[in-house]
Length: 521
Image (cartoon, rainbow, N blue to C red; front, side):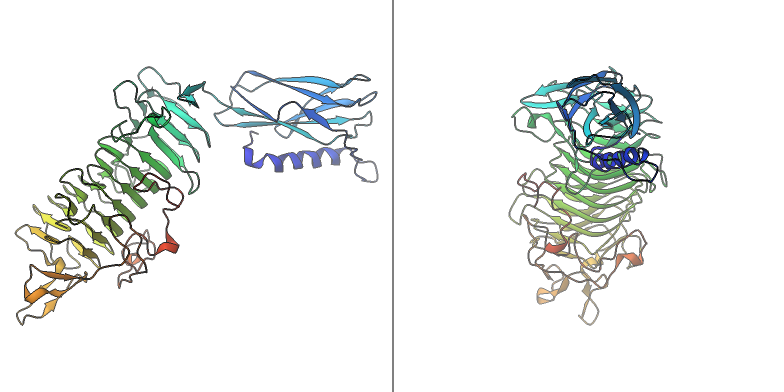
């Protein structure tokens, strides 16, 4: 059995207990452990499978007829007779050839007397398995992932072990039947030295297992951070998962941060609802940060920060669910939308916060629904854009709360021009209107409270304190009459507006890089 670091102490205690119990006398009295300690020259080492490891042991004269007892993986490995007066021994062992990256092989050493009674405390030594060679980039040691020349993984699994730094020399492409496994705290640095941009691609039929945590996310980023250079958007390509369509599974992604990617940061193509995706940040992508097309994957806790082509793009026939998403753009990059639903996409989205670079920058926009899309958005916030907080165009059709396209129970504010913009022939009732008696009607329950001088081009917009260009966290909870669990059990209880209800419930702490480049605390 191969043990991980975190459980070794427990394993060792169990080993010692087992060995002692085997050497009880007839009355069941435990053997006496006299503390004849074995000193191990080093506590651990790193080695490849199939190689020989060695460690020097030293001890006081154990006496005649004694044995050095060695366990590996909780089981007896061998016993070595000790000579009278012997005070040292060099232990050597060849590691099994089938070990995986990051496996830990624990050894324990004891001294036993001629009655097979343990006379020493257990001493430990462990080997951590590394399949790859360690190289230095800048001043940082990293493991260089060994790839076929074409970068295509046709069989098996590539595992990246917890807490290790890796360097990827070029694109890696996982074919059907293979797997990429990334444990908590993995940092994967993408090569920027060749002038080419490289991708991580999970093909249809392959699996991904990204198992980061809130305190140890998995990070895919630019190797310029190791070279003491300034990392930039477009330093590498994209993290791309390709699924087999609605209902399919491509694996699990939890706590992944993708930094300085290219035209798309976190790209999903045809990924199905059997896939689990939670807690993903795209930080400073050159294009869109998070972009699902086709498929019906359901996702929660997503962040796109200062992505130059917009934070989110939902396209083609994507029909998934999304809850708790943040798009934050603090600088003007181009005339783009921070959040776009297009083609025939029909997502259901709740609890989104979209904050832009301010009211006085060049044209950049909040949310856009276009083409023949039919998205439904609830409990959301769009703030701090110069114009077009929500724009409708092409063939988008709006009827009522049960209609194909919905933006409801939501807030748009600090958008001085066209906060609700309609470029269709269907009208835009999301901001409400005046009825035949000049009474204000608000059928989608958004934050419009009326119109200045009864002019429908001048909506009066309620605001939320604390929300703005540099903050997606409100000062207090803004309640909503809509709870998204009424749509589907996938959604969490959230009868409030925005991606984060209040500071005490901030789920971005500890793993999200903020707009200034620091980990949000």
